[in-house]
Amino acid sequence: MAKITFGTIRRRNQLTSFLVFWVLFVFLLLSFIENPWYKAPLEWYFIPALGIVGAFILPAALGRHYCGQYCPTSFIADGINPVNRAGSLLKSRQLRKVFMLLFIALFAVSFSPWKMGLPASMTETYWSAVFNKLWILWLVCPFGIAFPLIFILGFWKGGRTWCNYMCPWGTIGVALGKPQLQVTEKCTDCKACTTVCSQPEVLAGAIGRQGGIIDKNCLTCLKCVDVCPTKAIEWIH
Image: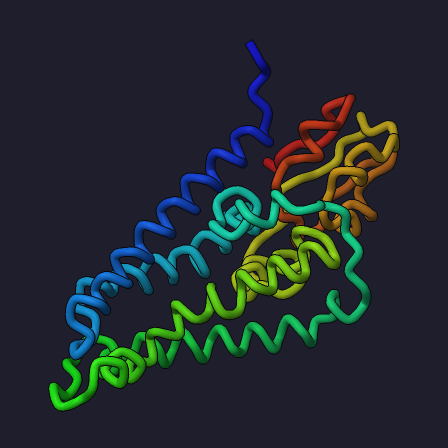
């Protein structure tokens, strides 16, 4: 029987969340087609509610564990070349701030009750009724911004470039979360972990015979745990 690794578990988690995302998207799209003259029913508020849980509560409790294990886009990103070739511009905090401000504005405006729950005028044409809803940006955001950047940056600079340096959800996880992993004194400094890490700079201050705390920007994808020959990488208790 093949050994079950953290990598196997991670891919299963990512595939599950990816499929759930598409199911929600299809239901949302069908609601547009069925009756575009009305805003989404109030029952759809479970979507921003899940967003709040995923963007703020889970990162505060689990750091970037969500990014590494459960984010729907990570199913795509992890399938692209993992080598990190991002330069200083992509790693800058200023770029993260731009996407973070965009995310906050989108979340605040798109799901306001007067834009989401109230009916639109029946005198509108079909397409004006559809596009008059600001919360359609939540369809544009993943398909018009995130997914294209994941593919472009993934093949250009490495599969996890968007996740590591630009994704606003990841930025929240870094801001609210705590370090999750540590390197113990069992480390032999073989650097096997850096060969599989999509963001090896998070390991720089931790690996070595003295050990240390892995930077909280770590995705906790746990690839390093799978390859470490001495099992020197552990959860922080």
